[in-house]
Image (cartoon, rainbow, N blue to C red; front, top):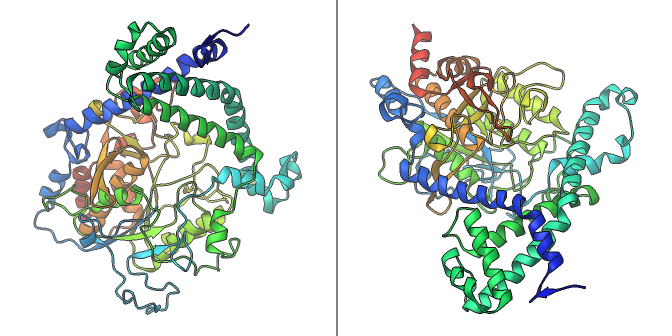
Length: 554
């Protein structure tokens, strides 16, 4: 017989209890993250620019670098930001944006005959000629899995012809990821759905009792003494949840939204295997995607659908320094070129390749790439673009990714290793470091590898420019990469004869070595030497890099 507690059945209560500890982990992580971010902000915005000895933060010693550079002239350096787009009207960025000198703004004419009309600040490869932008995209593992399933499913590598072998390997990896995520999500989905329904029902009981739409721990505590059993038990559940997550200030709606989002993530993982993805990009852009020579598509709308990501990356590199507003960037004589190739979801290889080529052809010396994915079906497009950049003396800087993985045997694309096994010498891969006050010297989310990651740079609680003249903090190798790109731009500006290979050598050999044990990124809890997490074992440092560049001159 089923006993009811109002709308909450015993079966649902058991489902809640069965999932309780897993969900508490989610809530605790959320609360701890929120508190850590607030504490870190109170400690010091811009900590990543500070000096370890003078300021006590494991930053890049930027002011010391500028002291060392006093009296030297700098040359302007164009840094291309291939990302989600940039708010070109941001108050702390607009004066340092690259402007195409051969294009007349807004006349609807391709003045410089480069195939891109009115490309004043750069170009958007994720939009239609009419100005409509792709804001949400599918994931590459889903695209690869379904696109080549009929060709490769059930096949052994020995039966694959050499010209299809790399694509087959990409499909096998995509299949493994899809199956792993599907199995994990399928195990959890029913329980999470029941738990969420129970949360909604119990919160509605409390909302109705209190006459409010959301509640905190302190607001619900008086209901523990309610004479109505269902009210008291609903209150007890929520009070216990707030207490176990060590969070007495957040509202119930935050917890409900977190579980709602988590359920959506599970549903998406299931759908990636069971449903072929929509061709969101192709329907909008309408190019011939498999033809790299079909390149004149997109529009000059760099902001719509861009979110804050690209604007934060740009500000980290070069927000106007010492102007009394917002934040300070790293390099003081830089022009940011905006290239939109990364909508929500995963980027497409062709768009990335053409963005690299656009940057090279229009004078960029450094290209920042704060994006990535586990498979790259048209990697040959990107490899050729990287080779082209190398031939023109252009440095590419790439974040290592935020999965807490060892990349030694698990590629994260784009990467410097070409399909033929050779390696680019103009490609710097950057992991994310922190500070003891921001959770540890190695960011727990950062990918790492003694072979595949070159150096670490601050990537925890980086405060930067956001859209609509806002400023915000964020974590990720997406921020570590522009910190490194900013230091690279500083070196390129004051030492303009250095090649990409020399700049990489300067950065990786001069960074601050950390001869200590740290928590290995990921969830293992294992302690490892920081020197094992990248090939240099160092954290990038602008002051030491300037000294190293000066030594090359001598």
